[in-house]
Length: 142
Length: 142
Image 1 (spheres, rainbow over the protein chains, first blue to last red):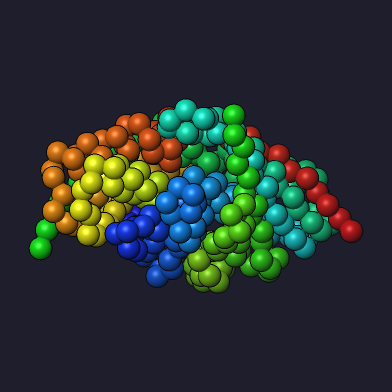
Image 2 (spheres, each protein chain N blue to C red):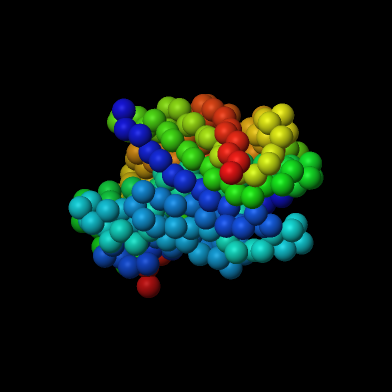
């Protein structure tokens, strides 16, 4: 069993800008719109989850197409999701369209997308299945 | 029913660097390590999903504590997750610890974390419940 760690830091106690610090050294920011009291310094967390899904399946599909020696020249993933208007505002359906450019064989593309969707993509599997999130807190004062 | 859209673009067909383009105009990159054939230009997608979870619950908790007039001086969210070593490598358990600095009342902090975890945080709810991800593809050649 491997363990993953991510730290999220509120940049300024007067705002809602959160900076995620990854073990790889990379950082991303998330925020809310100015009309909601934020500073719009980054995307919304629910959009970031869709990005994670796209990156995950994209890496899988490219890896599989490369192993199949398919000449990919360009690749985009378009994600569209219906979102509940009741709390919690989950996505009731997520649609992922892989747009692959180059002289790629149709059955190979179909197979690569299927393998990612059904077997390899961890983010997709995490969204599809029931999962466990435990929350706790700790107060610190100087 | 609202709709969300995110586009993910492969930066270079020789690599695995994906750029997510959000409707807000923000962008983030995701990548894989150099030893796996990537360029390490961004975090891994599964880590990005944990960041989305942290940002989501963080924004909720700050918003609730602000409404409760609690004097938050600093705030970090530490996320630790056990990850399966079999495909798909999902998180079998995710633990979220809210570390709140300032003279915040204990019962208010507990309530804010509970409200986010049980009612408001969409990313948490998405991970906890079963969801639907549909995949399709389209080939384009010049």
